Length: 182
Image 1 (cartoon, rainbow, N blue to C red):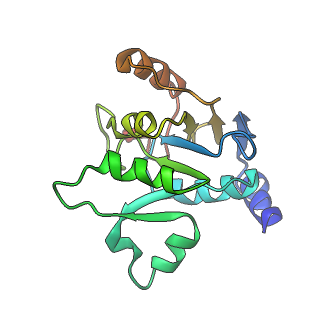
Image 2: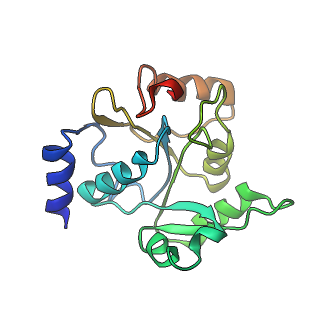
């Protein structure tokens, strides 16, 4: 199936991978991968194709309702883990616990927290990486240039303002599928 993913991604869609294309089969078994800008449902299959091409297992979390029949089996098979999103839950700690329970866990999140236009990113991904003591890998969904740029692992410090400047700079000039949201 890897050849099919490559054919679709590179030949049919005309996309390319830029940067750290070996984002970690052997070296980084645990990380928080942030994908931006997240403007469309098309981002999901781009990510699925890319992880097949790179031959790297990635995960995502979703509300527990997504994991019910009929789609639950598929979401689990592609790396999904359910998350109880009822109020009063410490979601950062719950997700950090998923890292501790697994030998390999690369959590992919959209820092915007939605597909709509936002002025400020959510900070959960940052605090999850800190709580789980794992690096952040940045990943662009650049529909303008038809490319996914992948960063080297970035280890958050205790200076969130400085760290966010570095992180946001990586995504400068990137356009999502829906340009008004980028």
